[in-house]
Image 1 (cartoon, helix red, strand yellow):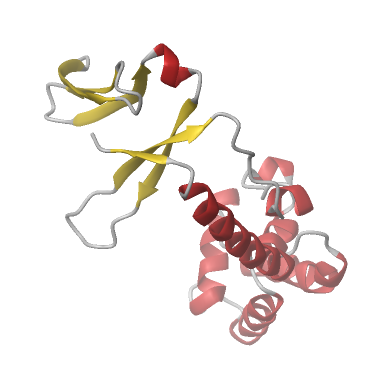
Image 2: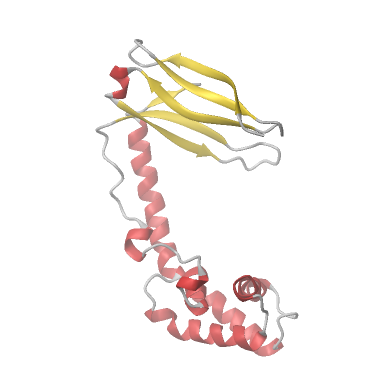
Length: 199
C-alpha cells in the first residue's frame, strides 16, 4: 500500500548548468501525488529557494493545482500587518478557550445578538435556524449537547463581553481585509523577481 515513484519530471534551471526536478507517485488505490520540487544545481541553490502557491479550483471535478516559483534567497519576507500578530491565533480547541470566547472570535456581534434573540423567543434548539442553528451545531461539536439554556447563557456572556474582547470577529475582519490587501501588493511586487517553474 506504499507510494511508488511513477516518474520524474526534469527541466533546465535558469543558469542552464543543472536541472529542477519533481517526482510523481502513485499507490494501489489509484491515488497520485507530486513530490517536492528540487533544485539540482549548486549555482541556482545559492541564488534561489522554491516557493509554491495553491490555485484553488471553484469548479466541481477540477482539483486544485500548484504553481511553483524560484524566489531569490535575499528577497525580503512579508513584514506587513498580520492578524495572528495583532490578535494571536484563533482558538479552535475548546479546552483552551471558553465557548463564549469561541463565539466572540468566530461570529459578529450582530450575529450573536440575532441568535440570542431567536433563542429567547423559541427556547428550543430544534426550532432555531440560520446563525442560531450554526451556533447550536458548534455547541454540539464541543459538548455533545444542544441544551438551549446552556447555549443562551453562553450567548448572553458573549454579547456582554464582546466590546472588551481583544480579537473579536468584528476586529479580526477589519485586520484580515487590510492584511489581504497588503499581501496582494507584496506578492505582486515579489512576482516581478521570481522565476516561474514550468514542470
